Image 1 (cartoon, rainbow, N blue to C red):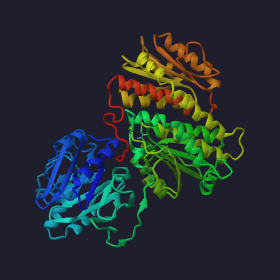
Image 2 (image 1 turned 90 degrees about the vertical axis):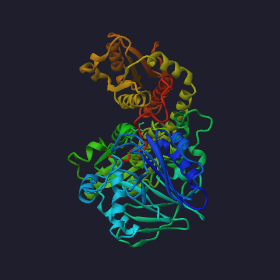
Image 3 (image 1 turned 30 degrees about the vertical axis):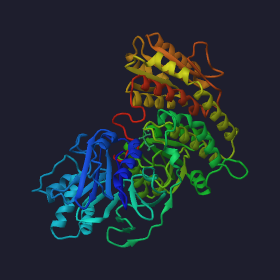
Image 4 (image 1 turned 135 degrees about the horizontal axis):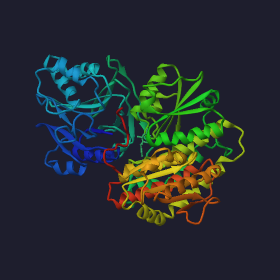
Length: 596
Ligand code: F6R
């Protein structure tokens, strides 16, 4: 959600900025812009729409070795050219890009900027106008930047250019991600390392409320109060090829195909020298000492959390509550005596989850983050981290990270349990092979998408127990990328109201992998087909019947979500393709949701 890049060095900045923005496209955006500075001053190019539109609007004859760039996902003000970043102060001296939300922008505008005509509907513009105001009152740019930061309430990652000083980009962050990339003859900034891997793999983490001056030949980090802080760069463990699509038409397809490999990587990453599954001793102790686990997550990660609850309760015998992060922080339930909080987040940057983390840390509780992004905010701010090892997930719709979350939750629950009556490693290996087998039957899934969803306006996904958890994820996948209205339901719940929506031809996808409730869910299928539904049954070997549309290879009953989700992901993908939707970048969505 929104992305920032910046470059200060010796070569022309435009291409580095545009390439960087292209790498940030996956985060979701609706407009984009860059500002570059040379002897003639600062030139801004910005457009509504895609980076390709911005590229077309950039005047290639303008050469400059300093610049900042931005992709905007609208929060304050509609997505249009006027509201796109960079924004400039009324005098034209300062130019700024911003991610996040300034909660008190209206108050600041009233208190300080009464006579100043603003050009956009954004909260961002207030920041750049404040810097200009304080400079006009006699402060240096750095002091004006500091003073402005001290007034802001909310989340931000900022990069500021001063048209009267070509040597520096002023940078700061609070709650929103931002890194500085370092090299010998230039330095860069980026919302995530992927954007600047093209030029460096050395990055410095920035902490909230630091003031950072990025120059061509150095980076100065200070606290808001002015104390100079030392920071060593780290090497980003990413390969530029990890973020390429290769011969795939879409990242989503590539990422679904990677799912067997992801499970195998997790098994390797969480094995000791004897080949047994293991997790860090401190994490194990925290899990074993907890009297209740509170899983906090959003969207797909929340759906993985629902599966995680089953694992910790059934395998490790620890009670678990799963909460939607945006609800929990503002309405905390009664907590147990010794809770442990588990944050599940692919990006590690989700603002809804972070606000919970901040609150529970203030209350003195311990937190474990399960994330795909080492060094992400939720990882840094929690006491412990378990990495997902899924590799960069670029498609907005999460697929391999969901599978990774479930596999890591299974490992954590299994190791916490100590004694178990099954060999998880062996069962995960079987699940990985089974996913491979499903992926090889894409043609069948494409046909199912065509048969059931070609003309559908809505669809239902039903299941019971673990299959219910997966039905929620199946429905989310379908709606987010194909825009078909879809709902996941517990099979038995449909008849309590929602069955009224079933009419002739309504597609109902039913998942049947849980023996104890197989007959019940088949009964629910009968209820909907009797009312005209077009039922597509996805069942597991050993409990399949003749008319079932797709049979899943036999998998351990606790691990069925790893395999049953895969046909649902692929059916959604093909349904979206049939409708000519932008599969990797669905409308209105962002990969990393950094506002609450
Ligand atoms: C859906 C999807 C979202 C995310 C949600 C949380 O495909 O990706 O629902 O799961 O925005 O994001 P993370 O996991 O990064 O906290």
